[in-house]
Each structure stands twice: as C-alpha cells, then as structure tokens.
Length: 438
Ligand code: URA
Image (cartoon, rainbow, N blue to C red; front, side):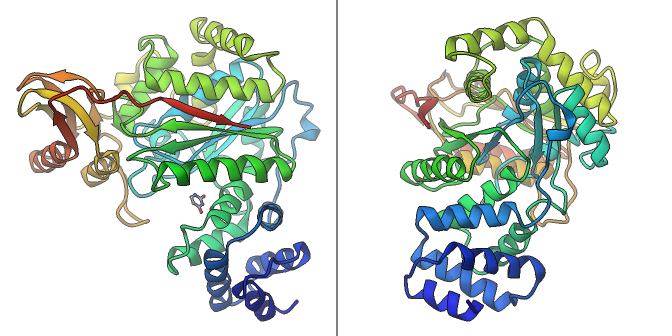
C-alpha cells in the first residue's frame, strides 16, 4: 500500500494489515517516508490508536529494523534476561539488579538510557565511575555478558533504528503520549537484545512517566501482552514512584547507594524490596528457580555471600573502571564542594512528595540535562531524603543537598521544600509493589 493510502486508512480508523505496518517501518528506516509522512502517520496512530495485533506488528517491525542480538553462538549456560523501567527518581534498580541476577546464573545484556526529563539515567550514573565506558566494542560486550553475566551499556546506532527516527518525529509533533507508539518504542528496542524473557517495572505515582495510575496499568498490561505475543515472555510489575525509590537522587550518590546495597552496608528499604521482586521474576521467567520462594532465597544467598557485589566489580573493571571501586568508592566517586542540610520548617508528617519536582531539582543542580548536548555534573544531587510518613519536628533533617555552588544549593532547598507537604496526620503508606501482570 502507498504510504499516503496507509496514513489515510489509519486516519479514518481502519486497522492496518501486518504487511503494511512492515512496509511503513521499512520506509521510516530507509528514509523513503518523508518527515511529513512519518509525522502524519504518528498523529493518525495517536488519534485512532492501534489494536493488539497492529501493536505487535509495529513492535516486531521496529525490533527487526536493525540488528537483533543473537546469543546462540556463545553457548551460554543460562538464560538471557533483562529488565526495563519506565523511569523514576532515585531509581537505581538496574545497578543492583543486573549483577544480582548474573550471580544467580542469568545473562543480562542491559542496554540502558540517559536521563529523560525529571528521571535519572543509568548510563549517566555509571559514567560517574571514572573510566567506565558505555560504548564498548561488540566483542567486549559479548565477552562480559558471557563471562561476568552482565554488561550495562548504551544504545548502539544499529539497534531498532526505526524507533530512533520515529521517536525524534514524535517528540516534535505532540505524539509521544500514545500507548501503541510507547509500547512499540520501548519493546522494539528491548526485544532487539535477543532476550529469553523480560521483566518491566512500570512506575505509578507523582514521579512516574505515565500521568495516572490507570494509564500506568494500561501500559503494563499492553507491554506484557504485546511482548509475549511477539515471542518474548514478559511480566510487568506496577511499583510505587510517589517518592524517590532510594533515599538519594543524582549520579555518583546513586552509585554509592548501589555499592552500599550490594555490599550489605545498606539493608532493607524500598529500593532493595523492588529490586528483589523484579529479580525474582527474572529468575522465574528464565527457569533459574522453581518458584518465587526458591528465587528469593537464591537471591538472598547471592547478596549475602558477596557474589552480586563481585559481579558488579567485574563488570566495572571489564568496562574500563577501577578494579577496586568497591574497596575505595570515596577515592573514585566525585563529591560536590557544597553540602547543605535541609531541615523541616515546622512540625508535621511528611505527607506527600511532588517526586517529579524533586527530579527536576536534581536536573537543575546539574545532575541531568536541559538540552540533549548538556554535560552532566556527576557529583551533585540529594541524599538522606526522608521517607513518606516520617514524623518530623521543626529543624529535623529532611534531606541533604550536594551542589556546585551555594546559590545552586539555595535554589534546590527552595525547590525541595516546595515539593513536599508536611501534614498533621500520617499519610496512608503507599503500596510498594502494586501488582504483577503476566
Ligand atoms: N520511552 C521510550 O523508549 N519510548 C517512548 O515512546 C516512551 C518512553
């Protein structure tokens, strides 16, 4: 079908045949569709939606628009598994989860992203480690996935190139917020990694990518269904993002937190609980554990024994970072020159966070980007962020700001205080893991 006829059909609400969707994605990839046609197609899909069969076809065509990683020749002894998150604040799950699953026998080729809007990016965090390269050559990437079991690296130009073009057009045509386009975009990239199974972490709450709990659930359900129909068994967890997941947000500070969790210095907490649940789903999906209890006890044992920390150390060293990061984090991870304690302005319970605003405060400190070409300041961020429900007396610590200058710290303090509510009564505690969708 001619592109303009396919766009007309979608504009008028007709479902597109699989073959037509493949031709359109081919045209997006090879440039034979003009930007105007790509924009019109995106808007037609945005307005008319796509049914599940169309979304599966769009996902598969996006996945197949470039290289699809193939692990068959490596004779891996365990399954190839990955996790993807819709992103959040203080969400350093990937840094802990990848090595942890590797220590349980999984192979995790994790292609991660940079910070987007108010959310932090795994690559930006890892680049706080001196020498860590997120763009290794293919041979190094494959060797690490085989021998260490995990490598967290950046997107290569050859994976899902159709999405790169389509996303760029969506970004400037008000068509990002379309469920089938989001599903095909996320999954097209992830399924190109040659996975045996995928686990999705879909966030819900004031720091989530999706605007309402209903929209988060709809995304989780669609992802689980579409990925599974596209041949990659996928489970989606709905998890709370109504406050930062870890008590910190930034780049070096989140790497430090990951090390604290991996080495057992930090026990318990929301970050560990969410990571443990996602990891258990991965072990189950990969056939590495017979049931959830067995998965959890294997995970607990591999964390306590130091095996997960050891995988993290080997991954860092294999990608050019220091071999003794775990022993001497303070020597390697940068610290900001200004440290400012923020205190509660009055008595009250910490009742709600505008988590998105907290994330934007970190961006403004220099921990994220306003424009795609901006450099990141790895040292800045927030630590010791009090948890929702904490009863605070006036003057008690709420959080600590790490900034490049006193004026940056002052601005961040104002933003932080504006982003939280102190109430008379304790808030209802948010459920951390709200649902598991299979
Ligand atoms: N993340 C993606 O990769 N694609 C989208 O469309 C939205 C979020």
